[in-house]
Image (cartoon, rainbow, N blue to C red; front, side, top):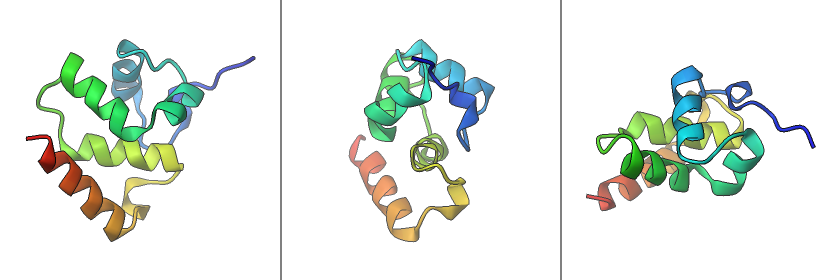
Amino acid sequence: MTRTDLTSLPEIGKVTAEQLRAVGIPDTETFRAVGAREAFLRIRSQLDPGACIQLLTGLEAAVQGVRAGDLSPQIRADLNRWKKSLG
């Protein structure tokens, strides 16, 4: 089965794709199965304790296949609340 490169998704550039691969998410199929929040948690705990809301928002947009600016205000607010709950 052919796996799709992470950079084929909106909001996933070379650096983010490298981060995802480094935390065990090698392709788009795995990324969508894991989800944005779990991917963010992995990056935050294993690579970048200071991972920001922009990364989380970009990951969520990528999972949904849209640009970050196309996420609804409700989704953005939910992501912000969730990230703040992490401390």
